[in-house]
Length: 299
Image 1 (tube, rainbow, N blue to C red):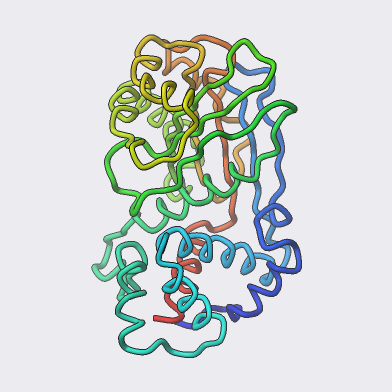
Image 2: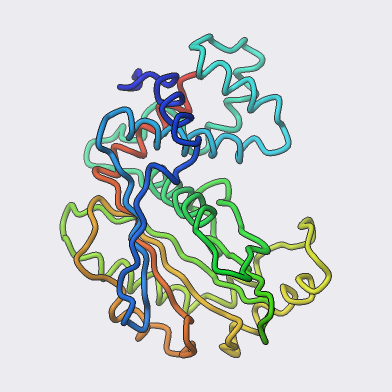
C-alpha cells in the first residue's frame, strides 16, 4: 500500500521544522501536585503533512537504529525510500533483514479477529525514546545514558533505562527504569488499569530487569561503570538513586492519570521515585501502520 502522503513530502515537511519531533509535539506538565507527576506529550496533526512528518521522523530514526553500524544499509534504505527507486536484489535482501522482524508488510492481520500488537508496541517504545531524548533538562543536569529500544517490543526484560548526572549535588548519578505500554480505547476509555499493570510489573520485576541489562559494550565514565554495577541492589534496597517511570501511548489524552500509581510501587517512597508520561496520537494504530508503510516503501 502506498503511503497517503509521499515520503519525500513528509521528509521535506519534517526538515522544515528541524528534522525532529520537537516542533511536531506539545509538552504539558500534569499532576504536579500528585505523588506521581506526569507529562502529556501530544503529537500535533493539524495537517496530513504534519502528521506524515512525525511518521517519517519515527520511521527514519527506527531504521537508523536498526541498521546500527551498517551505515551503508541505512543510506541505501533512505535514498531508495525518498527517491522511490527500487533497491537491487542484493541490497534489498540485506535491508530487508533489518526491517522484517517488526515491519513485515505481508500482513499482520491475516486471520479474521486476530490482531498483532508487536508493531504498535514497538512504535510506542520509539516514541518514548525520541520524546525523552528531546526533553529539556534542568540546569546542572545531563543524560549520562539513555537506552534505545531493543529489536522488538516482545523481548523479555526491561523496556528502557535512563541515567542522569547532576552537577553540584549530593547525588551525582540517579537512574530511572521505564516500562512502556500502548493503549487504544476500543473497549474502555480508562487508561488506569494499563498504568497500574505497568507499575506493578516494575515493582515485581525491577531487579530482574536491571540484572539483565548488559553494560560490557557500553562506553561509560569510570564512576558510571561503578554505578551501573549496583543497579539491582539499588533497586532492591529502594535507594533514592533508583526510580521508575511508565510511558503509555494513547489515542487521546485522559483527563487525569497516574494519581494512584504510587500505591503500586510501595517500596519506593522518596520524592521523584515515580513519574509518568502519556504520548497522545490521534488514531495511534493508524500512525503505527503508517510508520510501517514508510519503512517498507523501498522493500
